[in-house]
Image (cartoon, rainbow, N blue to C red; front, side, top):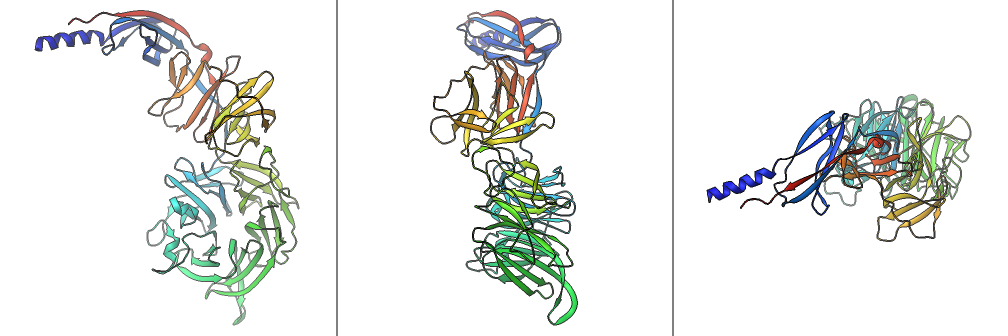
Length: 579
């Protein structure tokens, strides 16, 4: 038996290192496939391996294959590279919508309602939009509201259920590092504010303001505002009233009824009550005392969704209150603190942005938060999901002027137009990349429904966009009639034209260039890049473009593909094994 086993091992070992020889005239990257006698692929032996010029030999392990006449083919190229044309999306969360904004003398702080560990829940940038630092939590986290005071950024949010306002934590405004509370905790949970055994107390806070060492948390359903110490998180006071919404505060001075003429630390607090009333409070610090209050109702159709203030800290009445208004206006208006019935400034066209169609950059939708930076620019976090925009407006004239807009990375199907590779579909919208800045401008909203696949097609003289819904159902076909303007197409979806080249993902997650006849040409992306989806498209002229989500959508030109050429072919016969 031992002798028979030795003979079998010898027969197998003879197939374990079958030599295949080839010659290349100049250095290059070689891909070599071996085929069964029936022509089907047996093994991808070389996958873009680098070889110098000369004669070479590689070993083919055929131990597990049956005898027969096998063939092999090799191709070679001079090197493939992806040259970045630009990206779609600037920064921020990859799941939820813009939800928060705050500012101090140096930076602006922006938050998103939901994000995975691959993207950022909070971003700090300068007034020009240059990112200074980013912050992310666990696998799924979010930010409901932000405030900045005394070199600290306060975040209402957290991981899991806390993303909706279940905890309050602090970050260093310089670098985004976490600042623990005095007892060592990172998160001050909202439920910890109430005495043990309390019934019916809220688990989530709705809005946040921090100034002058005081934290103001509004609880709309509970119809109260809680006042906390900003350093310790200790509960100081409850202010009860009509259902409070968005809240902001500024530090000021005030005398007290028992000591007229003696100025003490105070806060001027403004909040939206019942969504349509501006409530103003003047609170002194020690002891906490509401020394003045005032209510100003707005017009019936004006519903406040966000607010912020700017003005002279020494004179609380010399402030402008910027209010974000919801449906049907979708505007930001500025009103004097002493005359809130009229407005001195307005940003955004009345009526807001249309849900579908060509992009309307001068209109807003679903205003969630406002912030005024050190240069006087107004930052607006818009809670619309398609697209997820933060807009920036000048406030030096009566009518606000849009100066820039930032978008969160799209989170669904992507496609690139092979004949116009700067044109991209991503996240329900159409975009065009500016090669000079490598940033994408939104051209319009095509659909608000999630899609799992997308592709452009050309049928006669028409450009079609074909979308595959995430939900079960037929493909949706649109005809492109202009930038960001796609109308439903009555005909069936055109067939998928076979591509000469494609991107394929290995089981381990790596992406590779492959040809239609099965050659792996090499790795497409650096291993450190977390690419969740990618596709490659070739124009009729043979130029190839790739698009990938990493997590921003990136548009690439594939260079070097024109150097791909046949290298060599050959045959290998595996004889019958001796028994």
